[in-house]
Image (cartoon, rainbow, N blue to C red; front, side, top):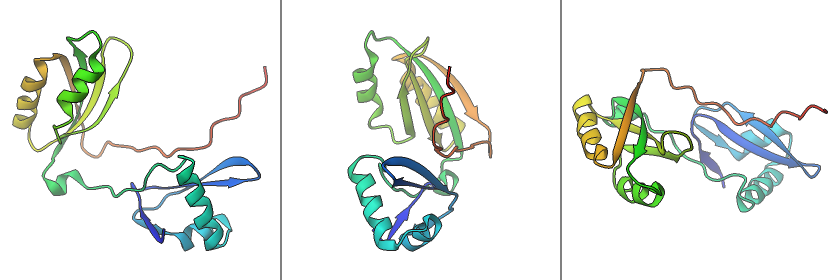
Length: 164
């Protein structure tokens, strides 16, 4: 692994002394193993081995590029809270949404709604058509995401549990 595409932040998990330690580098593009090795004071070879081990152990799930939705024609983002008409909605909704490319994330949730859907859409007319299509399967509450309001949080090491 010479370089890795990242989602506007580089997450590098380094295992030291049999304890997982989280190192977060606020990168913006690509990070190279050498840059990562320099930040964590390891040789590039040792860093590669640790990154490979963490990939094998499922700690690092993937590396990716982040696409600017507006540059590819998606000018609006929305979060849809979806209360379905189905008793066990997961398999039904998963089948319905799998071929809708504008749905970029989905979560099965607890509470009064069954799903949260994150959508990227080219226009409000398109959103209306998507809502009409999905509303056959339940009640939808729509929240438009305001421009420049997205704040991605980095994954940090968990807080220590205070002694009781």
